[in-house]
Length: 204
Image (cartoon, rainbow, N blue to C red; front, side):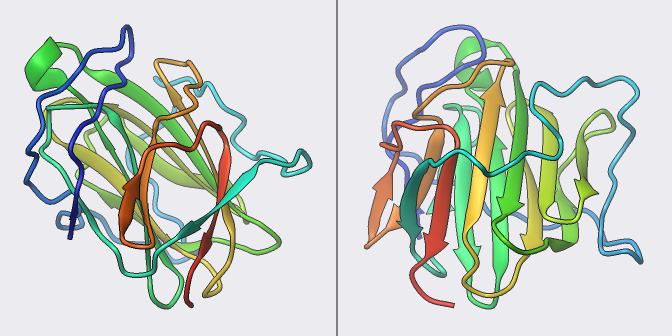
């Protein structure tokens, strides 16, 4: 496990966070896939998305490596960000966390994950509430739309093993460059300086 020492972004302002975070960001799955490989949690009628639900990948973006089977840990409610993980065999995990326990605010996240030149499948929701959405509107992109409080919200999906995935995230309908957290070469990174970013696994 790789512990995240600080998370700072929020939906309205930027706040610091005390270090020493310990709870696992990877928690039990709460949904199961439908027959078409896509999982739909709740409806979209009450939620508007701030990102294109079927993005294009025509514009070059920063590409980073993501360490295979490296898991992130942090404490729910103490900071805000988007946690990115890749597991051997083409299994991706994206989770959101907010600083609700510190600020009293909840965070609205919209996240898309696009498999470059491929498809996503086997979508599973994680800890979602009734107004949250984990879904796909096109074959190459998984979408997560959630309001996160003092808990974790997330999505699992599969790609071809080793596929590059482009992730875009909005927090409070705003694009922040350093909203992402991932592990590369044994180090937790929050220095993307880009949004979206593309992540390429270090091993299949």
